[in-house]
Length: 305
Image 1: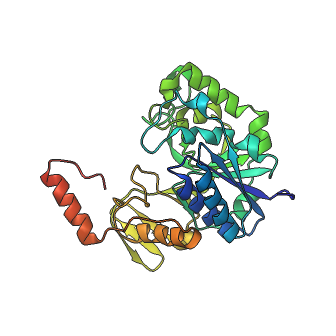
Image 2: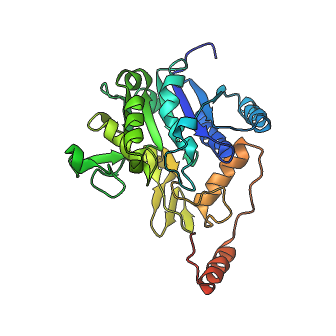
């Protein structure tokens, strides 16, 4: 990549999340009128898969650097089913992205972009290292775990780091990553719920810029219907015409057959088929979904989707 991009779009993945990460990156690149470069941090993605990923980017005419990262130092930090060791790789993004562009939009693998990222390329960060959407408060159970010890305001907002706008130089200047790693080494239990979310929010407490909520619209899974641009479920009301980034943040992902039927699932599957040539399990119909839930309840199990 010879020329600097206006914006770097970055993700991190292991073998299991490689293809979803490509969907996240390409859906963002396709929507941007600003010059972008993609960066995929690889935690052991196999050589054959890497070749297929590279072909997927080339087919869309998108430059992407697939960079190997050593995450062995992160191996002793807590993980969950959908929060793997690769989740911590986002802490390494600014140091790798600074040679590609001044700003980075970091995306979790379970995101789908609908808005023009050119807006974020020029969004005022006012000297702060990161911009993100409000995802709760400091004193919440998934907030900053040691807020009382640090004397933080429990009502202050925190952000969900699944979507971040990063000023690469400012992040590095303020030593955000070393600060997070130092806190994790000292208190790894602070990562027991959502990986680095608590400590990352602590490291930039009072030093991050709030983005409009449309840039990280998290949704709870559930059957849904569509009325024009409106996607509706029991807990959600999303207007696609005003949406920036949709975030399927819960444990069951839209590439999993267990994901509930409806337009939230359909738009993801459509994007997958548009951008990559990788198999997806058959989607469940509403009848399948009802039958599966009934079978689980009859067996005394709690349905997860």
